[in-house]
Image 1: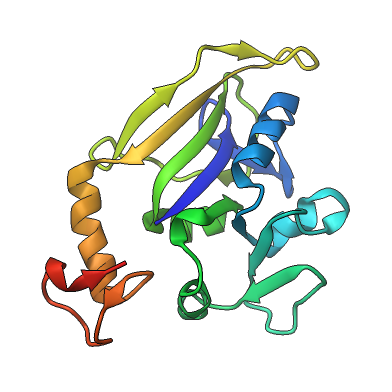
Image 2: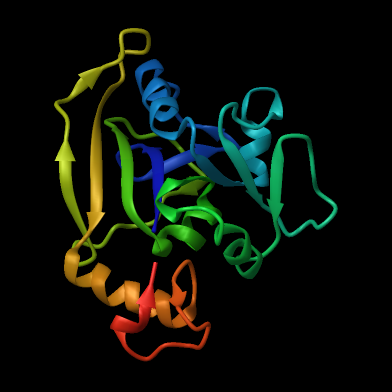
Length: 198
């Protein structure tokens, strides 16, 4: 399953007018460390919000877009979840990070087993919100001390959430039945967990 990485305010806001709510140097360095050498998947507007509107270096950049004419150097456009399934057959899904925006998180969070979250203890007006992480589906497994960004004075901490074992086990089987990232060794839809293969 994939990973998601996100920075949120106190009410899970993540962006306004196509821009991030916060830019914290240490958080950006952590983002780079976690995603470098891996694949990232994002929406078109997220790509266009990156410096120069260019893809992230030293990463495979997948861009979800309904516009079949959209393309630029350094990206791999994906136009549907079915197309994504076909492309990702050649990649380990745990090497793929979902990086936004809000609609992409909403579509793909159910296919993630880990969320790397930076929580900033400030409320900003936002028009993009990160989905809720229900307690019965997600466990908080790591929490840093509160940190302070020297440049902005923002107080934040790093949180890591993982899917609860029971929920993940049941959901993995549903993904297997749907043949999304996981399938049967014969290519025939499966009916038992033991028929699933990674």
